[in-house]
Length: 421
Image (tube, rainbow, N blue to C red; front, side, top):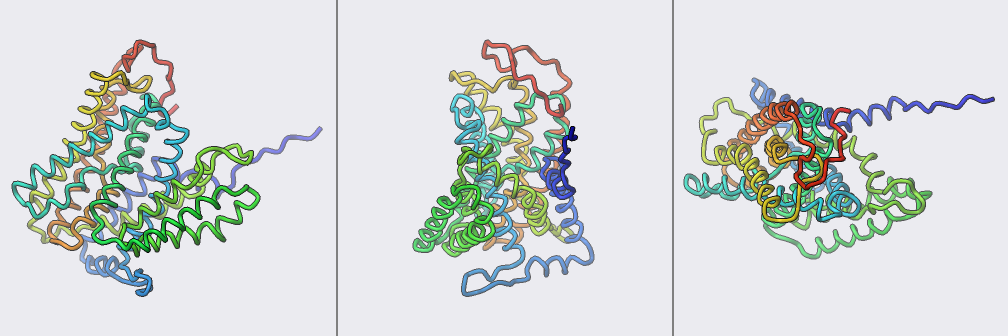
């Protein structure tokens, strides 16, 4: 009689799983941001400024960029590819597939973008109209940070709350990408844009090939095609991260050719460790290094508007939109989630960080450096305050007794899985 062989994961597999965890991803982002702020305010801050300003790359291909631009345009495209894959999965086979389940988080995401933008506009229009270009900065939500805080402080709360937050944040990112493509693109080379879309379409055809050739296609064909699509998108004038989202959308979200899992799931598992351990931390390190020593103009309408948008606008927008939906429409919150659970969720969406830093750079790259500094300081401070407040609210929520029908749909809750189980 033979003894069954136990297939233990290799050290490489364990590491990849570890860096893909919500807590790990958030911790790496935090460490990178702290390191950048410390260096940018140390006696060696000139070296940091020289590092992010150093330019390299082929000028003929419109890719002679600074290190900071390579991070914002290149590394973030990897992160947005993961966002695109998640969106495709959610729209085809996940929580966004059923409008009855997706309706509330979608409207909550819209409310969580509109109200912060209005907060910013209300403050800035009266005190500094030239800075109105930054209206979209407080609308962003950092998925990685928000999920990390929920994983740490949300133990004992319904696992459905993570799905709700993920759906809300993914829709938020989709809308954020739409904003970037629409409002932060000055000139568009239509021919290059069409060429990028054609390459993405070819990528979409090839990514559906049978598995025996799939492994060969990734490094030899699919990866070069993705790079070409990214370069063409960048040269067209549309922000290159849009290419990442569209490439993610091109991946099929249903299992095919007899496979047990969808290609979206396979690509997410394969690429998320690179996004979590490399792309996002490096971008955070190169973008969060704001020098505040010697700066006397940090407290200005831009910073006040962003801070209020992240801390007040987000929670009011999420809660207000959700309350209106469940009060005046047949839609209800998902099973086991009540309105009180959305108080910490609304605060979690105030963690702007990564995408907010990107929009700040796009907003003020050709404008006042004082606006850029004030915006980044407000993003960092606002995100930290939102994270700490959300953590406290999550623990408050977890310690309160729960009803048998939290979402008030007239049916006792059946989804009893908890975060941390």
